[in-house]
Length: 137
Image (cartoon, rainbow, N blue to C red; front, side, top):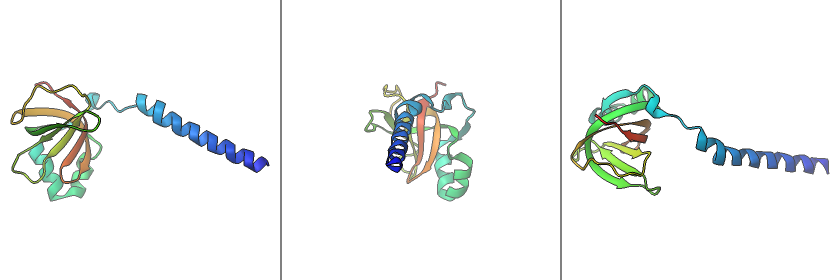
């Protein structure tokens, strides 16, 4: 009987800890990328480095703050309603995909140059940047 009580207590504490982490802690403890020193790079150069040697590019950029400049190829929204941008060249196989923090529309249009600061999270077919904020020049 005491083993059952211990098992129930462990399961309850684990569930409570999981609830706290997902719904309380993770909502209030975010990384403030905008206050971090960032690596400045052109979108074309960043995607070229990942295409040439992904292992080296991951060592340089993965989970680091980056400030990327380039031409907007596409503007869209994700499932959460956040703005997503493709930055680079329309004729390129790989570009930089950026998800902005805000759901507020941007003033820039396709074909215009933009600078965004965010976190590089690696590469799939495009280099992925999250937590992006448009930098005013």
